[in-house]
Length: 480
Image 1 (tube, rainbow, N blue to C red):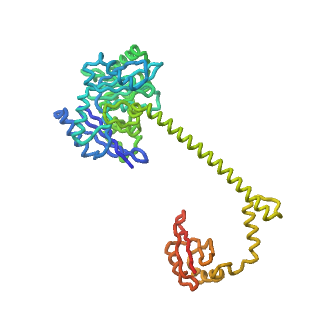
Image 2: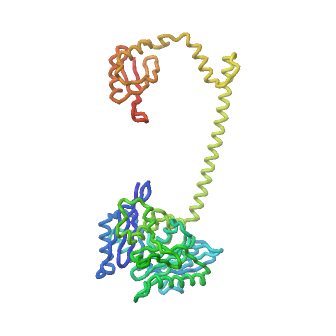
């Protein structure tokens, strides 16, 4: 049974959406759309109009929505705690962050990414105002959508890139926007720091200004947490990604070339060409990555109350899941042990039966000195003993075998394509097994045999095609 997942990225100036259809054969890119918001309609009304156009275009009924929101409304903090228990971290996180946040913790929703290091638990904490999350929920509710996951749009993309990149585990991802670029530092597959930086203005070079801000961020990371971060790769996407490469044939940050994330487009099966302006500009890649975090169970943080990904369930119920898994394994091991014991018991029983058969054979045929397969040898002896008495009439059979063969040869002319493989003669019936060219021929043979004087009725016990599909196997029962 297939299901649909909608990756939805909302910015103040645009809405980008990618719809995936998930089936037994994997993900399929079904539809997509990029819907810019006019400057004169900035705000919630403009977003609503774009959402309505998106729903009408993509037909998102019953789709699970993964929503990416701008990082500008989210606070990011790096802290360390001396324990690893997820429940304890959730309990103390608001109190640890309260002195560094501009608004009361009661008005915020928290989540975090845990990074184990040298006995410590480093945390990248995310805090977003409840009214901001409610704002996006209300916007989606106006078009009958309910997000199962809400996260910073670039965060989901950075997490997904870490699963497909072939470069070093350490890389930067830059989510470009009209007024701000958000930089994600990914180390060993985990996002370890996030910074939202304003786009350079007044003619300042974008790359040089961004590089200086990133360098200051890396220096702060090393001094505050003792983490030395040396990325080998830099990835960029978003509607303004061209700002990082425009006019630069080999644009680079921190000595590494800036790459696009177009490789993620090969993860789902496309149903149409991706060589379009919206795809080539990078406007839809982040929405696609958001959908893939759900279909590929990448997980991560989630500001939604309707959690769906495996990682969120794992963080909530890890202890119970492990206990249940251990009990299931013990149950399976016990059942397997019982099956092994039962099989051994049956093996001993079969060995005893074989011994008894051999004893019966030796007592019945003492002249045989070499016993290899007593059952088969006994059948050969019985057949040999009965060969002298077998004639044209079988014992107990009312119709002679020669008459049956005569009826078959008379009623079925040589022109009929039929091959009889087996004939079993009983007291009052004969069972024919063979093959022919078509089902109609089977019916024709049945009708011809019913016309024979010695046959009362003919029943087609079975008729089906052979594996080759060229012949029809049949079994006929002839009653006398």
